[in-house]
Image (cartoon, rainbow, N blue to C red; front, side, top):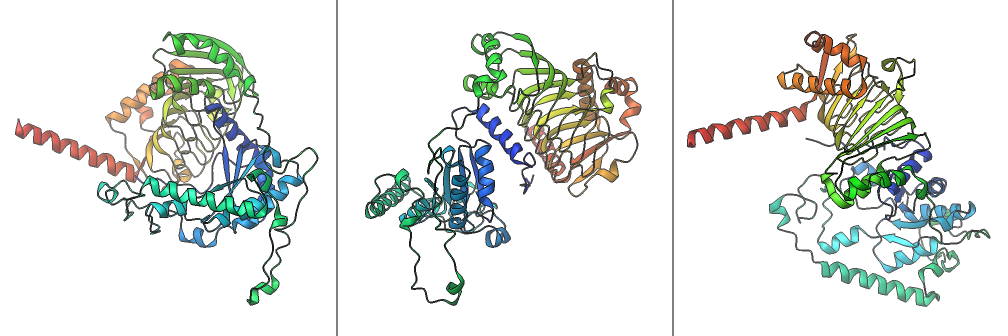
Length: 522
């Protein structure tokens, strides 16, 4: 089954969205650095300032001549600018905004020599990325077939025969970097620097060559790159501070205390808490603690927590197996992002007079990148529902545009209307839509999917999911469906990706052939 790598990040449409993702990742692993990679281009300094304000630990300025072998030729040849331009602009803009000491600046893009590292440092980078050169040392011959599984030297392939051709040695890579470091130390000594920190941003050590005999050089002005922006009194010229994420105040600290019997003694735990919309990434830090102890097996005994109120962004992000969160109220964007085996339930406040199936009770980008787990939502969700879902089973009562986009696995049951462009880029998993009004065809992107009839397995699966939906949420929509199950099944549309269907049929045929051979041998 093919996996389409979407050009945009569908959970990031603003600096605020990026800040939320960084916050999610920090909750998921408090000891890790969060790096944000930006393509060198005009205006990249302004974006880098936003990245610093979003509390990333590192911003990487990537040059246009990087060696990514899986990129389209058009991107390799026509995207981005030299890293020198973007790096200089980034360093100067961060200094101008008093943000330089908050963040580490890296640069990459065909860094091959100690001279490259020295120039990058003088332009404002304290760290560097070396990728293509290190791969060449290991034997890469730049065939640019990294995405085709046909790498002739056995580096970027899962093919066992091709991998046997790999003859790279760790010692060669170590030697390469030792010589790079030695060369940089020699340049630093010539310039009078004893540490990298002293060297960062000292553009006065760079001089423009004037012995270039080329007509294009006549109109070349490098003064913007070599402009020496002074640091503010309260700022520094390199990274000196750690970003403050205020993780000591998150709701998960309380959750981890409540879950101690489940975490350390293997006991079942039930609890109830209030929640407000400033409680973000709830469950993420808890799941990190679970994964450190139980890996991907999850808790041995259930941890059930009931929340009352309005859940903030990224509720249940990366939620681990064995944890069940129920929210009576509503929720914001990124519900169940990266769901990893946990169970999420949402229904409106029981004292509310709203009709759940006619109202949006959870925001956009639910289950983005979910890998496993279940969720039952009484009410409608916003746009980009189940984008890149690869394994979660979810029920909802209506969604906005771009549902199940780039989905590769899992099951989505939509008991209501969908927005336009449903199933665009969907290459795996199955979606079931209750098409009561017969207009779903007009909202479907049928480029990669077919509408298939239901079989007995589908009917059993739908019965199970609907029964759970009623039990968890008290859904009147699911109750209505179950009250006339066989009739309503006729209005269910099954959205099946063609490649995924072909793989399932092939596996089924192989299993049948194996059974026949075993019967003959027996």
